[in-house]
Image (cartoon, rainbow over all chains, first blue to last red; front, side, top):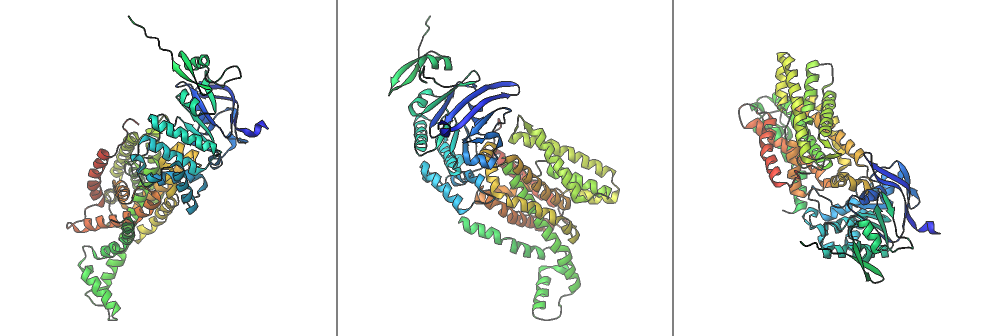
Length: 262
Length: 335
């Protein structure tokens, strides 16, 4: 029974960048229909892990299973039907219109030229994200927050079952961060599985369903012994003394302030 | 102007351009008036009027028509290739000339002309491809090819093949040398049916492949990660498009010589007019690229008593354009 709810299963996954080990024998699962956040420090391997899930990096050791498919055996087009990926930041070179950018999400289903149904799906995705007013604007002239919404529309046009997002809020202001995370929560409520790398554990605890921590080349998740927002555990993960303030059955973490005065 | 109207105009433009070009040239026997008289005479059933109908026929159909068609195809090939290369390298500041492709193809063609026993088109293609591969390889660093490094490596590769071309010229006998030098500067004045025959198949084949892949270029222009995760194999598609662009533009170079920066100017003008969507701009680069080169060629035939090589014109036109683009585009110097 439990196996049906697994969107992603990772078994004995190891990965190294030019000899330098980033992930060492990782075993973990990600549940379907949930908003899962991947947390951890800079350079801990969060993005690497996500890129492995997205099929952007090839691995030699271990196995990743996505909705029952062996990741290493998926073709580009097959994978695009299952997972969609959002880069941390995207730089546009040519002044494409928003609708043209969103339409490229359909690439996996388009032989050479988009059909009317593809264009219709792109417009649906644009409306779903609530950026119909930006449709004919030039993508590269939009603000960072608007650009992220366009790229999420692009993912929805692609129509995968799992969204993999790499720090989608990193270049956004506070308001845009909240709006984007609310949107993710809505998408999950509608049946999508969302896996996102995030910097801010507090934002993750406010919006997320499940939490993975990348630490010392491993992926740790909370056990019945401690909650993900456990101050001691997070102080260990983030290597900084933290204090937990209860919030709606969870907790918000604040740094302990120690001022050294002469 | 209304965009739809503009697009329709661009598609119609080749027809008057082709007709006008038939009337232009140094021969008095085939001036506009003579041709008009001959056509009119033919239509009204009179026997051929004018002073010399056979000469007129020869000038119009054996000299001007093949030249016009070849000029049009050359312009189309360079424009479509330039647009495609810009999309797949995500680099608005490149074209077959800047990439070193033209110099490579020119060297290949000259080598074949000097040695006789290799087919000119094939040799141009092979060395054009070699030049592109070299530029790409030199520019690639940590899996990335930046805008600037591609321009720089293109300069070096172009320099190498231009030097090799000089070596070929040095060892050629005077008769061959003259034709090689003329042709290198970008010249269509000795275009005939034979040249058209040898080049139109590879040029059209290359253009056809780029035409088929025109929407995919939008996806590729977004970036490798984006293409890959939305279901496209960027390496495979880019290689195919690059081969097609090399085939079309090296064949154009083999018959018309180096027409510098033409593949840079036209895609930008088209983009300014109708936007960057390659689904629309690839066919428009075909018609406008052909038409505009015809107009430049007409100019080079009429502006002075002797013919100015067309490559000289495009270079003089393209250089300020390139400078304008450097100033205008936000190319990441750091990226």
